[in-house]
Image (cartoon, rainbow, N blue to C red; front, side):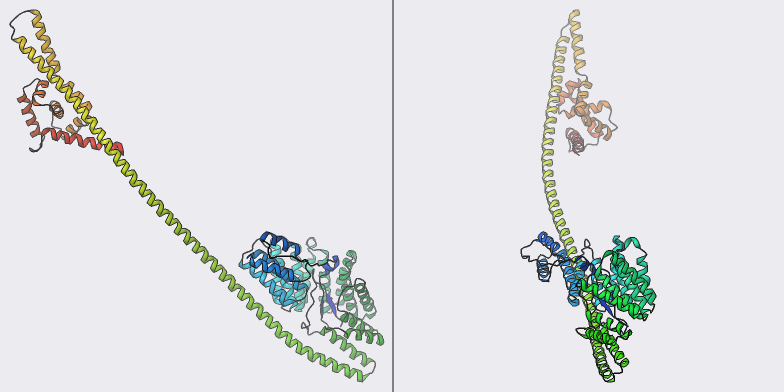
Length: 601
């Protein structure tokens, strides 16, 4: 069986020589970016001085040179500058672009390294504003190219899930087609067909290039299952779209595969027709491909038609410059068949020896490549493990820094609160001092007012006592006059009335009570046994009048006043060493202090 070509979504990946399949009919020729070839995008180089760029300029430069450089020098300079600025977003973008660049150059190790770097930066720096699904898609293609199919499926699936979350269903379908190609590589053809058909049914979220790649993938899977009619039916659907879109690189591949399917049905004439049709299309657009595979397929078709000279010519061309081991094996097998049919045993033996030598070298290469593949898997796992360790360490450092920051902030808050407390305490003590001074001044003022009131009352009481005394003297003088003169009698009566009105103690005590309102109340509370007259005696005593002055006011003898005071002192239980006046002063001062404290509070 001849060699067919896979058409991948957006990108055709050249498989390395170590990807040798056990079925001799199975060889995948993966070509470069079909869509890029279709539009003939030209790469160009830019010489950019990045050593003085700031972050904003760096971002602008990265955007301008993305996918537009012919070599990695500019990207590596940008990566170096990004690291100097510790701009993780820029490191992510440049590393990703370097991965894409080396992928286009089929430098798998370098490509995978930068994709891994970009993925690590994304996770460790928590660049949630970036989209990583395209990186997963690119990394999956590199892993598939390296033969790490299961890991490739893992990353294609990650990309598919993220595209679904973002609502980009077209790109999600593209990821599913890549997953289907992986299952073809694993020889799970039914599963591959089912996935592609599911994508084909979603007509609103699939573009023409995806359809062409999907139809070609289904046709190859059916060919592997020996269902050539189905293979031909599905590849023709791809040819119809490629023709309508004039996508000649894809069309050349599809025609070549159509020829292979017809050869499977022993229809070598049609196989030759479509094989040359694909070759002429590729030649007309100067499309670079492995011509050794192409010549080998055409030589096989001529062999099927028993055109031995043409078969030998094209098989010989197929060997020249062909490094694809599967293609070379098919060519040598066809040479052996050719010489058998021509009855040329010497050439047959020579070709068989060459074929067995190739098998030995392929077996050795397979072992070497298998070891390399295992090593790559181990290195990839180790690198991912290291990345996870670094991410965990970075998270621990971030958490530690956060805790330290919280501790520092807490300490600063405590210090500020302490300073505030000290300031408030200082203000409190100062205010207490001011309040104490104000209280002292107020007390002094109050005492002064009380003293003035006391003096005023004393003066009034003395004046009253003196007036009563004068009136008594006048009365006594009038009484010595023995005269019945009515006018003298009227004067005498008037004097008596004046003495009586001046001696009315209630006038004085009322004024004293208004001046010392709490004293009378406190006396009644503390000594409820006192009568109103006795309370008035106490109030007059508070004025600090002499016995004579008090007696004059009360119109009694001084002795009477003395006896009354002594009786009140005993009745009130006043100690003998404490004067009656001092006791009254204590009661008044106590009530005055309480009232003052209440007014302050």
